[in-house]
Image (cartoon, rainbow, N blue to C red; front, side, top):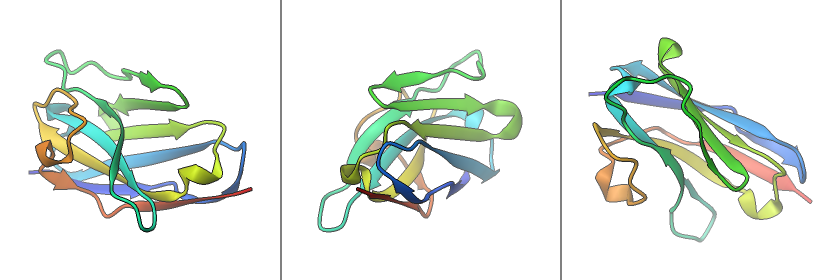
Length: 124
């Protein structure tokens, strides 16, 4: 079991960058794939990016998808999502989720554990 807590959201202007954190207060995130999802008002939850579980428990592994970079720091039991050049359409609640020994799926149903979310609001 793992308990996730996101932080780092806030109100920013378009063009800025943010780094969101997903900390496991219980359990070891190194045993999990971690996915990032977001949900904007009136819209369905959508996949952003994910880090697969690695059998070698490699640290600081980056996954870059366009403006989104996710990485993990196993010593801090934390996964990060950095978003660059933020746009108003990035406004949403961002969630991290964990999938035990997962492959970094883009499907939410693969993730059993979810954080409470952190709000990101981008003004134009």
